[in-house]
Length: 178
Image (cartoon, rainbow, N blue to C red):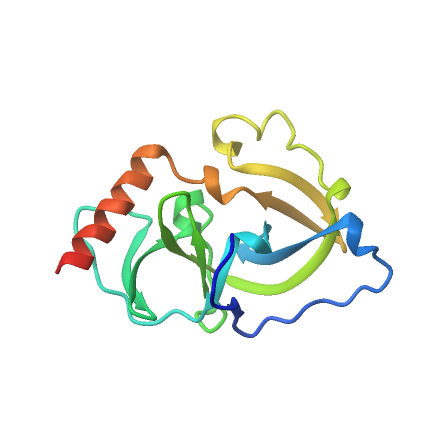
């Protein structure tokens, strides 16, 4: 994904690890939902922001928290913990919105915390076990035990069904026209 504007990641720092050969690694954003730790390719993330004021949206799935304006663009905000049914107690100070580009639109994903950007060898990730690779695991690309943490690698392009992406696109059109 190429953007004219440089991505910004509020409050995140690159975790240094000089022992890694960067040609064999990929850069990931590490974030948390409840007690679970996730990773996503940093190239999928346009920005990381602190949550602001959200406008309510009627008749949307329960995981759609509302809409917000970011640099003049109206974005639907998805509560990723609700989407994955991984809600836990969070410190609202740590919450972040990951602004990502889906195939047809940009959305914000509300997560409990976004902690760091790390370089992890692609070979460190293993396919999910058969029990989690079914319907509920269709958006899991791999799992690793890295730096004494179990980290689940997500594929944001597979998180939402075609119908959900269409509903989000319709929401964006409706809020833009108002």
